Image 1: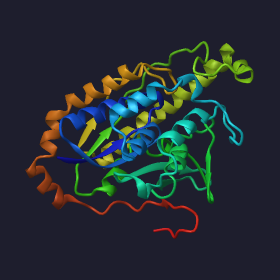
Image 2: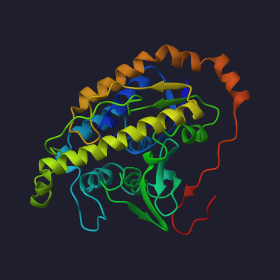
Image 3: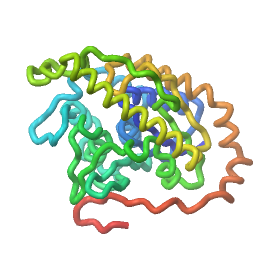
Image 4: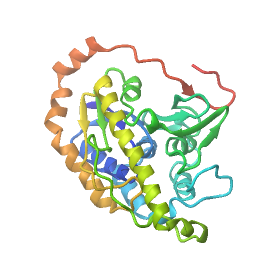
Length: 306
């Protein structure tokens, strides 16, 4: 039973992807291609490199979540940095390129210079991950050739079309982490995710913290509606939507709990997934395959564009 995965963005909610992967593997599904945006891009890249869901969970549990957002020399204009994430990627991905991955994989980003979505599927994988997670204003943009890249979720919260382009004959399972209905704003009195650094401590003032929370909530609302519209257009065969309404984009979370929520959500759609991967569905899909929309591919220096 072969499928393609589209892993959506959602910050701290992204640990739910681990439970989804765990469930699918236990049920005997073979993931033949994976596309990811933002937090989904992290999981997609590391999974494609050959790590199991359990190995990823165990490694992520060793990470001090309060240190993930430290700034480092050379960081561009942003409130926070990704020093902790960068270190994690060095350990788990090293110098791997997309050609080195065991499963076909592609990530999304947005170029601030042109306003266009850019597909990342060539070159160094860790660089692509740092681009896809670069939430504007929060994390530093990633410079690459003539591109100035930020979070792919700005235009494509759940990369269904990209997952389909990687394996056109396979059903696409979309994992949606953003709530498809808006939630009331929760007033924040501090920014608990910030590391204990004097400069950053200054911005934990109540008014600034609340303004920051309004900004994050606004991004979440935008992602909700954009995801809803794109899912209607791109029509993945199956949608998995874990219950994550109480989780903020940058919350410190219990990884096991969030992962279990993802597993439960995947278990709930197993009957539908079995229907979509049946022989009759597969035959029908062969006759419905359409040429995917043209997308731009970001390539390393010295390589021609396709």
